[in-house]
Length: 318
Image 1 (cartoon, rainbow, N blue to C red):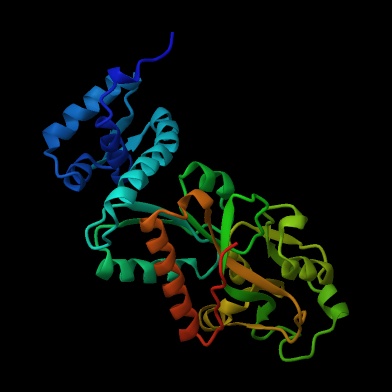
Image 2 (image 1 turned 180 degrees about the vertical axis):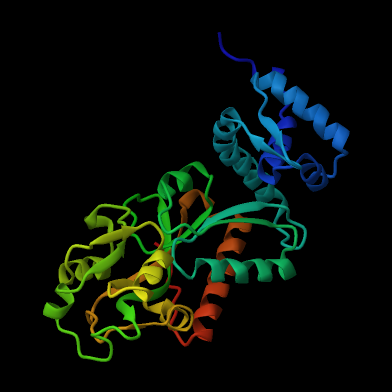
């Protein structure tokens, strides 16, 4: 028998969303301008609807059950679509908007971009919520863009899905890094000597045909890695304490030298550029709040690069 949606109070769904994202009933109640008893009563009704506890108390907060995890993945995109539809008719005011966005930035500059975007939005859009994922090896980003659980991605991997829009923020390059007292440091490096090096690298995320030409070109020049790691900063940790050589984005070289005592080796493919792009789903194009987010994200990224003397660019999205 077909389920009757009219039997469910849809006003409960934003309450579930707030409880899931805040991981605490008092914080969720404050976010929704509700009393805590009203929040508790709403969650009791939600448990009855979904026939699951949904949240389990732990310390001063709550943790979601597996049912709540699965429910949130389905509901977040649907609730976002409803908000977009309402916002499209009422206009968008960044000063009062309470939209929440999820942003994934696998690039090592991700935490710095996130910090600057948070600082900027605290001034111009103080009620907007921003959630960040800066893992070097995120999972199923394209699917999350399609289902709405991720709003924007800043990444260097190519996209095969024609529904995904892209805008280049800047062109990066990969450079070979070694510890400051490495035997090859300060010497002109040949392809032969590079192939003789022991290499540490980030584990690949996708098939070769979806990796930028600049990454594929390096793959032809170095030997098979003796160690693969799951986070880019782990490459620097290994390089700084061993005679291994690692590949790292040029945009991070100054910070890598300052904090890890490593330096680039004197060899790089001349044409090995790696475009770093902002990616979103095409259905977000007409959403004024999403467009505002993309503009602020491009703005803070450009300012960050200029502060480090690096070029940036924002060609029209495709």
